[in-house]
Image 1: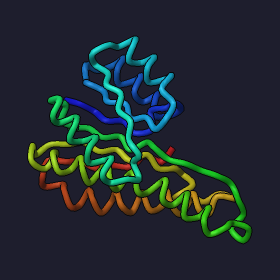
Image 2: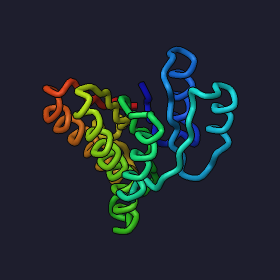
Image 3: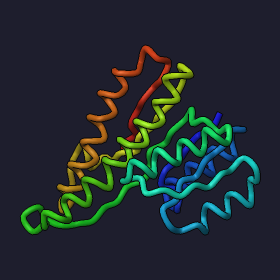
Image 4: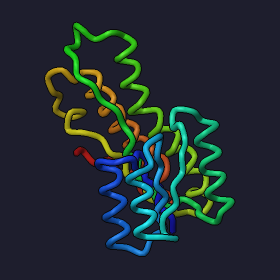
Length: 178
């Protein structure tokens, strides 16, 4: 079983990867966008159980190619942790539309695209586990984070809907508010 963790450049994504590698025998696929240091360190430490992939998760062709390459290498994704995300601060009345759109896109589109392409294989195999990392800001709000809160609230809504769509296929979809 392979687990793909998006946003493994550092922070939460790399911590989740390290935990899985230390406590399970799973194959772990680390998605990175640009920085390789953390992922390369995990690959050096855990060897063949780690695969590092690079993709623009806001580009469907990149996401589709990433999943196709993993399947071709006999690493079908049965577990997906959507951890990639971006944030910034700004009072709602001062935010530029472009910044609102950037935060919405960077926190919702990768979750949608990776889930969509993971589900294609999971549904065929009648098994899968998806965990979407959200934020308490999406539930409770925070000063200076209306755009980030809106994006993370969207992740909760997306998660609930997809979970209902695939529950009869042996697939679970959950969100964590961290």
